[in-house]
Image 1 (tube, rainbow, N blue to C red):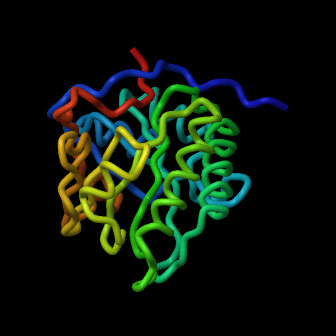
Image 2 (spheres, rainbow, N blue to C red):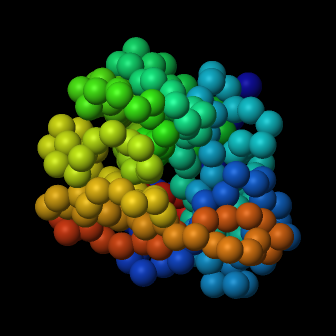
Amino acid sequence: MTTPLLPGSVQNAAPGLSGFDTNTVLNATSASCFVNNGYAFCFRYLSRGHGQQPGDLSYTEAKTILESGLALGAVQHVSMPGWTPSASLGTEYGTNAAYNAASIGLPAGMNLWMDLEGIASGTSAQTVIAYSNAWYDAVFAAGYIPGIYVGANCILTGDQLYNSLKYQHYWKSLSQVPSIPVRGYQLVQSFSKDPVCGVSIDKDSTMTDQSGGTVLWLKMG
């Protein structure tokens, strides 16, 4: 059975909005609580394997999030720290990210985010570039717009992130990471000490980058 598309449309994120990312499944109560506390968007996870896993974003959860009034984004889980990328792995993970997104009703045209962090020390920049661009190609071929979450131990410099990768959408983690020349970031993460609405989160805020780019997410209304 084909999963129906989720309600809403792909929209450009307005600057200055507060939201969050979480590895916790939301329900109607928690999603509404976030809205009532001034949060405008939520990012949830896609699996690395072929098919969504328990605890990751589902059609039912995504529909609940959207119906609460939150905008929705999706980011793929990264491997455990110390992992080694390759071009073939980038193709595999990117293909799975797009498949999993489509399987839960996420429409083409929105961002899917690759989490680049925790790479094994000594990995060459060229290897990371090959992985990242292979992930981009697989996701883009499926009709989604790839984005990159820049985390700790991503190996690449700011110049490499901007000039050697194909991405136009950058998300800054709460770790110390390079600035992105020319373009800058569209999403910036910050630490949240205490659970909000009973959910452990990292906070995020939106901005329009220096090239006029924004996050592309799913939203009702």
